[in-house]
Amino acid sequence: MVTVWTIAICLIFLNSFFVAAEFATVAARTTVIRKSALAGDGLASSLLPILETPRKLDEYIATCQIAITFSSLVLGAYTETNIGPVWAALLVEHFKLEHLLAESVAAIAILIIFTLLQILIGELLPKSISLQHSERIALFMYWPLRITFVILRPFIWLFNGSGVYLLKIMGVPASSHRHVHSLEEISLLLAESKDGGLLEPEEHERLHQALELSEKTARQIMIPSQKVLSMPITLGLEECYRRALTSPYTRLLVHGSSVDDVLGCVNVKQVIQSWFTDGDKGSLKQLVKPVPFIPENLTLGRLITLLKAKHSHVAVVMDEHGAMMGLVTVNDILAELIEDIDADEFKQPEIVEVLEDGRMRLPGSYKLHKAGKILGTIPRSEAETINGLILEKLERVPAAGDVVNLGAVEIQIEKVEHHAATLVTVTRKGGSKNV
Image (tube, rainbow, N blue to C red; front, side, top):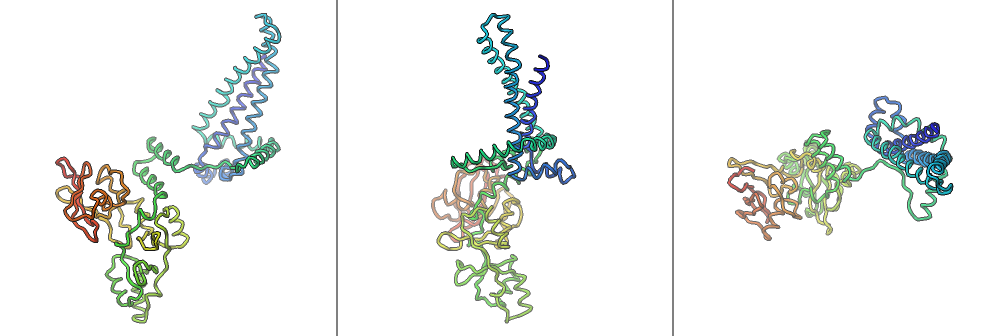
């Protein structure tokens, strides 16, 4: 009887072995395995191609699943065959049960006891351990699983093929195991890493901003057309040279008959070089480089891909009527990650000035999502700039001297240009003027 129980326990541990292998493989971080492979770890070098190839990973997981199923079935059949009759005989001898009833009671008792052992030792325990040490266990299990894969290859081919065929009949597309995470899951992982001390608050903030970056649109970070410095294509090279000398920017926008007729941009260095080389014989048309045109709702993730494909540092944002709304540059995208930099090549930098009395002066075009530290809790708004928020609160065109109350602060408009607040001051309420 001791031998029977020993074999039964071994089957349960065999089941736990493959459960641990399955969970560890799925949970193993590819980045950690890749780092170990680059450091010269042979097991990591062998496991990495499996984790990075969906088809191989699918077969790897199938090996675990089929082995788990086989070990469970063998355990049930073995215990029922070898332990059931013994227990039934004991029930007949000691409790005077009928033979048929004793066999039924023994079968139920075996089912309950070994199901509990299977769940506890064969499922829950290895799952918990493998999730805590996924990379280490995945590497340890590599060779046992490779050997098991060779043994079970015919069954894997049969069951995987049958499963795919059944999915086709049901109209469900077949999918493979892949190590992917949604943006929400990655954001949660970053928060847990910060809480666990693996990330500094500043690092967490930068990574969180990088995640949010892909969901923003070109319209949210563009330089509005009113702030863009441009010149007509008909301008002589001498005048272009003069503007290039006085311009604080490295590139200038070039347009045709109107600002909406954007032709491209020109590098000020090329203008200066052309003037010294060709003089009046030079032409601005030869220096203009085309720029891509993008819709206002294009996400920044797709915009970055487009700029890389076009080898361009700037894109023109157009509205649904074909009018130019503004520009987006590579530096504008970087500014979303690193706020305190002079990012834009086509407009003056937005400077926040701290006054002697504690008030803060900043441009009305300052992005609202960056102004949280200055304005405090910002009410729900569809505006993208401080000027847009002012327009929503006043419900009219602002005028110099207007004051807008926002809970803990008040915004006073100092300067208005082209019906927009271009300069405002922020004062903390409650006696202290420090913001």
